[in-house]
Image (spheres, rainbow, N blue to C red):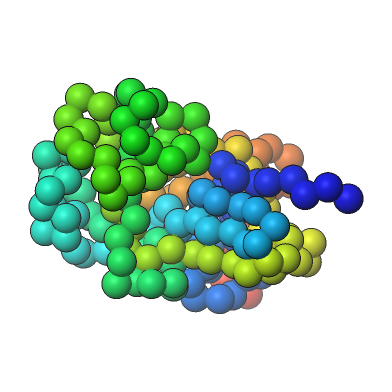
Length: 181
């Protein structure tokens, strides 16, 4: 069977996924190929001010913007996603106008509508993500820009499931610990 890339897809953690790195997480899959996959957790803001972490991009970020936990891999590094106004501004696309800011992008003033920083990323080796999806650990969803740059990230997991409708909308209302229901 030919390989189908899931680049630009949201991975929504299934309710039974207990790994603390991904418990009720929403991951934007930014790269996906036969050799593996890479994405960032969208809904885990930290207390670190983004302007303090990368001062050179501070003029492109909203006041009070925080660095987000992108995942458990290379947490000392920073990944930047932007909503590009100018598609030729030097980014690597993830979906629509959303993509990575390349290290050599230069001055992006006027080229991006928003920038968000992630400490680390989430990564999977060859075949690992496909196996996790087959086991039901991830629900696949189509992203919208507000998933990446929205302000109410605390409820992102439930909002993404809710807009899928049907059985998944019911999961969105499931308590974090069903035993206390």
